[in-house]
Length: 363
Image (cartoon, rainbow, N blue to C red; front, side, top):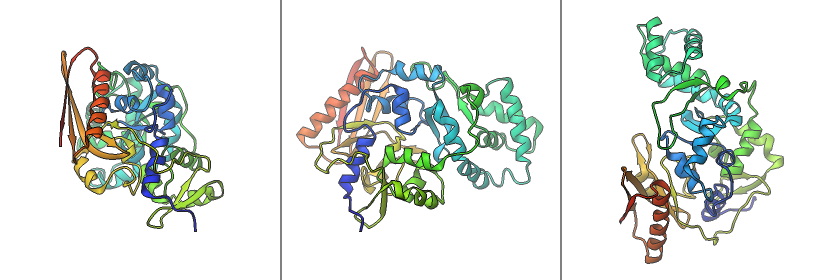
């Protein structure tokens, strides 16, 4: 039988891939590529996700990459907004197209019944070729041609069938703005990928999230029927099993630290892919903690102690002050509390340098 990896070993391997055992020296673009993208519904979440992973990261590092079009925000895995490099945008977008189609065929099935989707797509392209539009503006413009259809559904057809990026100043630190769409190809200056390379993408996933099962890969991507891809890759991969006997695949030379490796306190932003990219997520978050961090629309910002989610955090700022509220789901030892407070103080200094800081810990 394949060798077994215990849950704690799987957690340490994941933290190593995710740059959460030790901060790394990298540019924002390099780190985003290494992570195979960052979930980014919350516009500023990736700033905190990079700060917790990259040594010396500053907000201008990501803001410059966004305005310089080296990274983009686009609907990708699980039909959610992701921050990816311009180089990865088209290949990943082509690969996840079935998931975006499935969303139209399920969530919008009734609203789109009998509609010529190709005609909506072409009309959307024409509109976006003229100027950048918010989702509301796009839907209203399309509704003028299809007045009996919901504007939101019409805009979603274009969003799910055409690679669209959210252009700055959206998600630029300290500036921000409404979501405005542009077509990805002219924005990035690169052509759409003619066909996806599933095997290459799965290898990228394993480098960032392995060891992983077929269901884990499918959970991350929002796709199904990836067994055949994994079977083609099997001769190139190391094979393990977890405590329940589930088969796991990994890159042979990828880091797999021992269970006794120390894992420092780390603060993760809301929606961080660390907690959303496996079918079995107990390697870093217990089922109880998962219930407590979930919200109706997504996931709270969390913090790790000894490699596991121990609670959630919230940051409130104004022009002169910043308050970090830390909600620990279970009691912290004196040493754990000291480490949480020290890392929290560093987070405050990153997010609000020069402001008056207030850090509160509750259990």
